[in-house]
Length: 391
Image 1 (cartoon, helix red, strand yellow):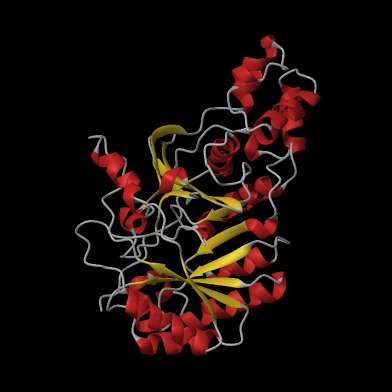
Image 2 (tube, rainbow, N blue to C red; image 1 turned 180 degrees about the horizontal axis):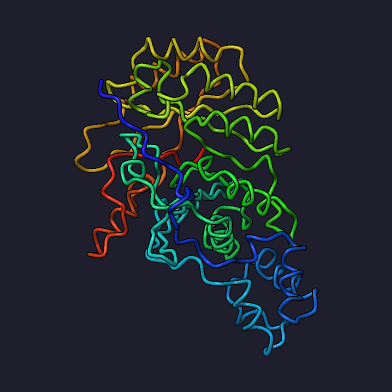
């Protein structure tokens, strides 16, 4: 099998000037917002007022913040609430329980978010980068390459917007409050480490500083950036780590997840087990089932041996291929045998609920379609398969 290079993933490297957005209140903690407000000549308590609107009431339009003096509203909004996300397309399926949004950022980059409603929870899948530099060949986003990192506020604003959709009652049969966030959209979250951690702190801080979610309801996905996994374990955060493994052996994983050429399966799993031991959180092992590629019984047995007795849960993902892809999903009988063998090894295993197939549910597909609709393509090429969605 041909090894693929890992595309460089440091858009902040010297000599590059990523088109980052203007500062937003979600980039700052509450003391930082107070300092900025006083610099504008406003009383410090205005920071709490505007933060309460954004995080507490999920209001993003300054015109609705009527308790702010009209003379101050535009000045405060200009400094703290610049427009970060412009809707390009919003699609719904599953009787409205799954909603996918395509956003255009201030520099024309495209990113996606997904809202998924269940009887007991509402989950949002958000992007952390525009594109992705990990070059996984079965992933639509990975094949598009990396445009840039998102700011902390661009990440948070996706969740706030979709939390507002849930609060409006638009997701019938689900609670009206966002409860879970998964960093499984476009991009490799741990390649945008500092901004992702800042975004997490905003999501879990109580209102008005943040959205007030439980840390245990936040999941961060990674293809296995070992130093960043170890760094995340030291952050005093109890978020769930989702490791996109996709193959139990180095020969195949070198192709499917090219970063494996840097950090091999054993080293990645060692970091994951250390994370579980430090945080007390069970690791989710993400495994896309690809027909005749990684779904052989012997690979199920090998995976079972690697995970047996560990604090881990396997989340098998039926591949969502795009038109023209050479990759296809494993058959249901093969999938069931894979599950049987893992469970026989004592490994907790489930198969991910497939959502959003009719609305280009795989991450990167809608962005590719959005580009094809516009001759001013923003760097996303048609993808070839699925990026992780939601557990």
